[in-house]
Image (cartoon, rainbow, N blue to C red; front, top):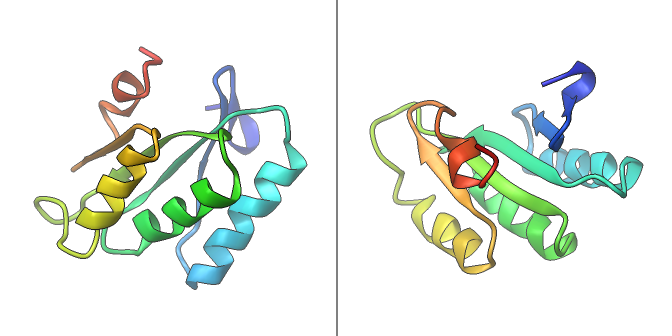
Length: 110
């Protein structure tokens, strides 16, 4: 991606780890500052990122075009599974795996 998380596909921005409210606030701020760009969110399983990203989808309909969750431990965690399923049910492609490789393909950008 280019400077500040921008590239030709839109906003590709890993959200820093921290308190859940800070993650949601950061997403809201980035999307408000860039109202005409689609967003792709990258995070980690086990960090409640799937939960935060699902809430962001609800607050920003049609803005979040894809989510990728890196799984530092093997497989998706039990806590993340229902949120990952709900993200997909909301129509947002959600890639999850040991690395971010493969996310662009799932998002239809490759």
